[in-house]
Length: 284
Image 1 (spheres, rainbow, N blue to C red):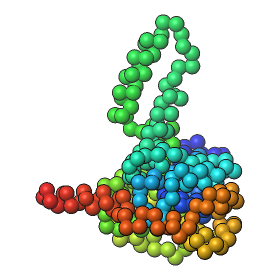
Image 2 (image 1 turned 90 degrees about the horizontal axis):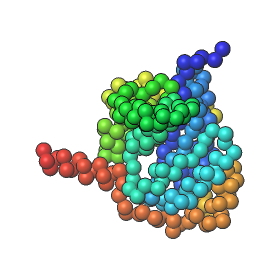
Image 3 (image 1 turned 90 degrees about the vertical axis):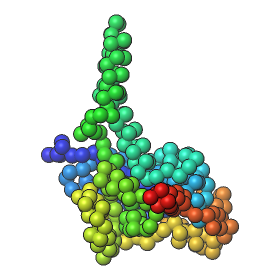
Image 4 (image 1 turned 120 degrees about the vertical axis):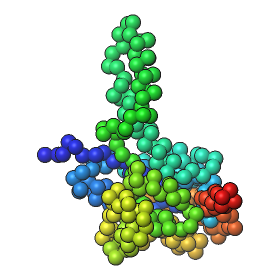
């Protein structure tokens, strides 16, 4: 019998997706298999959230194109979808805030489904409006309900290890991500992800909320290698979904010129976090 106490999980992958590859899609499948196999969780949805243009990463093409490619890549998926909220923001948004945005959406949807009356009776409309107002006021003070799915950040081992790069992440954001939401990290056999967790106090403190998924059938596809192949007029077939390949070719998206985009520009998180660190140092 299926365990009715299983926690429903939504897997959220944030990143450039420049372009989206078959490996990105495999991460979702690997993570879902692992989480479902624990007997404690049931993955109900996956979300791809491409970063906005303000991230300023070298070679990052327009979010418009990256979103469309991700949508084309997930057309045949019954459970992975693309969300455009992050990509449409004028300024770069911290990953912790993206997680919070999606968790709050799920909580709001849960409130609507649970609190909405089945039938509106005459004379009770005002009473229901007052009750709803009280519920909304109390919602922020109440702990998250068990029936609301949990959003967890899906990533590769490279993102986990990037936590150690000075000023790339705020320490409080790392604690927020792993402590309040959780990580599902796909890593390869022999990878040092476990050692990295051991050497980080904040990750070690929240290790129970970090789910390491072994990728036994290794796949070395990366967006960087895809762009390199395209610059050299080499085939990328079977490395990205066919519709993505067709879209790239139709719009001639990747070239030596596109790879020079944002050259010399400081990555948004480094710029923001370095400025904040300098400000605190000056104030102190």
